[in-house]
Length: 260
Image 1 (cartoon, rainbow, N blue to C red):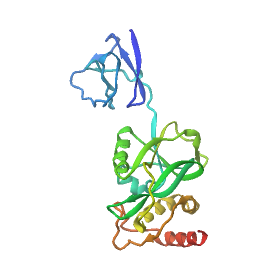
Image 2: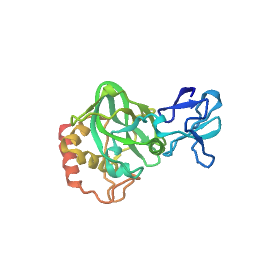
Image 3: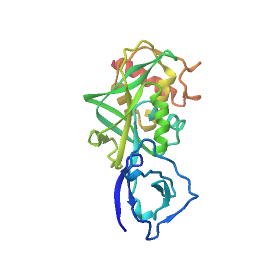
Image 4: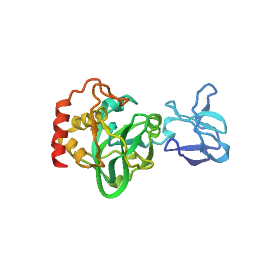
């Protein structure tokens, strides 16, 4: 069988482009496909991918044997704010195990004004010599788009992080694949307070890992401003109805205020 290879940019795999349909490959006119937007394929071919391992070649649906597809790279997100919290992540998409990590060259600070809520949000910028702790969690391509919808509307852009800048804080080997982070599009001078309902979500996530992780978050976050207690009437859209670690959070903030 004569075949060429091309890279499918949307799926991060290599799919054989067959010029002859034989050797067990069969047409299947009833299979559904999901078109890949904006991708250019040789010979006017199109591409789609589902669990049934279907691709489109020259607008003809073809089913390939499983052995003809290469393993997909994993997609991961680095969460350094509300995404540290499992409950907060799960409101966008159910998440699995996380790996606590530290990123070199990323500065976390309060640098996004959320005008409709009259508050500020955490952001990050690339800055040498700074460290930022957070968590890595694995997602699919489709799930990545859900997080895009959550983060990009607020003032973030998604960037790929260099793997050599990421260190596990629990001496666990990092999975192979792409690591993405939502960093600040345009850092702003803050003009609103930090709301407690937002901070409660973040620090609850930090305490899910450890108290030391939470302390590191506080010490390695910059541009602090006044904290407004809105627990009775929460303004953060993904606020926690019941703050199980409220006493620990309050004690951490008191401790932190003494260190500032």
